[in-house]
Image (cartoon, rainbow over all chains, first blue to last red; front, top):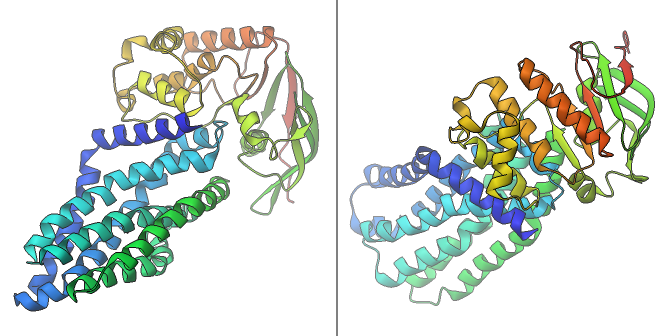
Length: 222
Length: 209
């Protein structure tokens, strides 16, 4: 069973290696959205430092949503999704492999990029580290929750917009906890409680989302 | 082996078939014929468990397939309209990942053998996207020779896009599978000289609803 999970994970990473542009586009989008803010808000250092965590988090949400469209759609179009459904392996596990690959291609590099972005926005070491930690703990839930939306809208017309409307409200708790963790750190408080909630959200989503995704996929493939 | 009981299927307010019952046992080959839109593909998808019938049920080894999905999946190879082949992977990679996802342990030699059998070993290092439709079909069909322990083959228009030698190879595979106690359910709208005795099921498109 775990072998099937690893097989899907390996396959998706291999496909990403062959289509590096798709991964790069999402990351480029993430960086470009963030660079828009200083242009719109103005170059005042204090303001930017204040809003930086919010900007990075919102950009991470948008980048995650942007990447959802391809999560199941390609497998659906070429028939490999049918094969996964009929593979005789528990679908919720195989799906977890796909989500792990998705996180490694979006959440993980976004977290890595945020180290650089924290420096760009002149954040102090403490809040900067909190931002990175909050993304590390929070982005898995973005992939997991997003995958539920992607599975539900699979094969529908206008799936891209629909998935955004469906998933963004569900991202709100993650966004709030992520931003509050950094704010606590800026204010000299301990960010640990918020980080723990973020971790709990990710763990909860890991436990529940695969079932929902599996059920949604079975319906969508009909 | 597999039993359809009183199947009814409606797609978009149109009834495709009603009260359809049949049994396919080990060593049998069921050939589903019918015009376009008669519901051949829908019937196959119902048999696989990809589509739920409007009413009725499909049983495998006497149990409803929805209850034994994983065991049933392990005993089944489905080659659908879509080949389930990734354009960015090579033929060999496609087969290896498919086998790994199905929980089969196949070595490089077995994959090479399957590719040789379907005469695509020369292209095994090419990305599948650069291959022709017929060659991709062959990659899809190569799964049949990899999944040695699966008893039931469900093939949707397997002869599409195949050349004459491809058809002969597939006939050979079917013959060997049926002789070995396997069961085959397939659709084709072409004239097919079956290599084994077949049970023929004609689906007639019902007029109106």
